Structure formats: C-alpha cells, structure tokens
Amino acid sequence: MENRRDFLKKGAVAAAALSIPSAIGCVDTSPIRGKVAMKTGRTGEALVLWFSQTGYTERNGKLLAYRLAKLGMKVTASEIRQFDTKGMGDFDLIVVGSPTFYYDTPTYVKKWIGTLPELKGTPVAAYVTFGGPEGNQHNAACSILECLVERGGVPIAQTAFMNMSAFPLSWSGDKVHEKTWMSRNLPNEGTYDRVREYAVFLALQVKEGKGAEFAKRVTLRETSIWFNPIWWTKKFVKNHSILKEKCIECGKCVEKCPVDAIDLSAPRVDRETCVLCFGCINNCPVEAVHMEYGGEKVIGYRDFMKMKNLSVKEPAELTT
Ligand SMILES: Cc1cc2nc3c(=O)[nH]c(=O)nc-3n(C[C@H](O)[C@H](O)[C@H](O)COP(=O)(O)O)c2cc1C
Image (cartoon, rainbow, N blue to C red):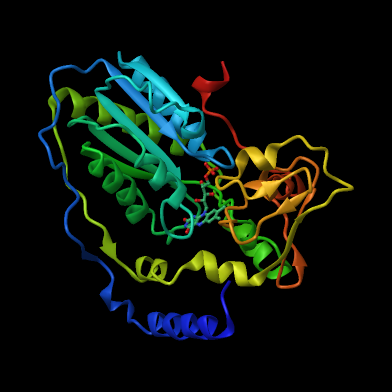
C-alpha cells in the first residue's frame, strides 16, 4: 500500500519530469538489432500473434495473416492468450502485435514474449495500434522488438496503425468527450492498405534475408513512462466494481483481464492488481462494470460506440 509520503514523493518526481524540456525529443537510444545471425533459407511458415482488448490489433493481425498466406506462406495466427508457447514449432517469421497502452506496449505482453522458447535467429517483426498522433507508438513497437531480440529473434520491421482510441477516460466527461468525438479515427481501407503493404514488405524481407535496426526516441512521452502513468491514473479512478444487480456472469471481463483481478463469485475487482487497461468496462455487454473518473461515470468503449452510432468497417478480405 502506498502511504501519503510515497504519494508526495512520486508527485515531486513527476513534477520534475514534466519540467524536462521537450527539446530532448528525438534523441535515439542504442540500436535494437539481432544478437545472433538471422536464420535464412526457408520462407515457408509465419506466426502472427496479437494481444487485443477491443479488436483493432486483432483485426490487423488477421488481415496480415491473410495477406501473408496469399503471398504463399503457411500461417498460424492467434491471440497470445490462446497460443500455447510450449508446443511452438519452428517458424521463418514471427510477427507480434499489441495496442499501445500508456505510451508503451503493456507489461503483460512484454512478459508474455519473455515466455517464448529460444527463437534462434528467426526473423521477427512488430506492429502496434494506437489511438492518437502523439501516442509514443514508435517506441511501443520498439519495446516489442526488444523483447523478441531478448528471445533470440532478429528484427526485420516494425510499424504502427492508427485507430480510434479505446481509452475511456478520453471520452468520459462532457468536455473531453466531444474532443475525442471530433478526432475519431476509425480504420478505413487506407488503414487496411497499409496493413496489406506491411505483409508484402515482411515477406520480401524474409525472402531476401534482410535484418534491420531500430532505436527508441527519447521523447517527453517516453520519459513519462518512468513515472508510472498507470499508478497516477489509478489515483483518479474511483469505485471500480462489478454491479451485482446488472452482471449476467458472462465472464467477458474475466476473460479480458490480463492480470486476473476480477472475481465474479464475489463479485469483486482487486484494485491493487488491476493495471487499468479497461478491458473489463470496454467489453461488458450489460454495463455491469462501474468506475468513476472526476466524479463522473466512465463509459466503456462498446457503449461509447453504440451511443455515437459508430461501427468499424471490416477489411473486405475478412468479411467473405
Ligand atoms: C488503457 C489504455 C491506454 C491507452 N494508451 C494509449 C497511448 O498511450 N497512446 C495511444 O496512442 N493510444 C493509447 N490507447 C489507445 C489504444 O492504443 C488503441 O485504441 C488501440 O488500437 C486498441 O487496440 P485493441 O482494440 O486491439 O485493444 C490506449 C487505450 C487504452 C485502453
């Protein structure tokens, strides 16, 4: 448990961080590159994996898998929570996708990559989805590559696809609500064309045995990660709970929670364990997950989409 002193200490550190001038932006950190020789020769089998809470990263992952298959690769595609790393075969390309949360790839995804078996020079690539133009998406994609390199992968590419933000605090509350509405960015055929082009690029990199180097940029957004934005945001989110009278026990919130913080039998949310990913409130079909922010009820992603009569157009290939 944090006491008042810890809280003030973190406050002072965060204030110091905010005073770091934005002039530090765009300094590159040490390059992310393979530590072993790239495995070349075979180009047959690809593995496309994603972590996705509201469907954007999943949709792009499925489209990538579809296009790689069209380009002649045998493709295995899966959400990471449904993928068994133990029985994992030998692949010629591994692609990992993740949403950007709090200016980075979620810790859960990084830890999960750490459980992969030794990749022995397998070409690896990353993609992230993100919700705003200043979301630190480049560095988030670098984080995925860093983890894959640790497992013995050799980076060949990384990219980011912009979507609608699924961050409920950006639309809960009257004023910001309208701001998010104005800057909504639902994926369209232009977004999907970039995914299709990425598949072509990946297949070519593998075929030609081309590795690449990437580097994180020391931006203000990047430095803010050092001061634990989840911890800070949690301070302002109140009464995170499951409403017993509304809950239909469908288990969607439990399934989406990456840290097992929800116990439906009570029902109870362990707020200490919670990483504030909003997977529960964003996916509850009956508005049974309750949270307050700035004194107002937080609206989940699906409810916001319904309220604004928005829907996501699927890529043509995935609808037939
Ligand atoms: C908890 C949370 C934090 C987020 N933080 C960021 C962020 O730092 N930068 C950004 O560009 N988008 C951010 N977003 C928006 C998501 O990255 C974006 O909506 C993403 O496409 C969601 O992917 P998914 O539908 O596969 O879960 C955040 C969303 C959530 C729910």
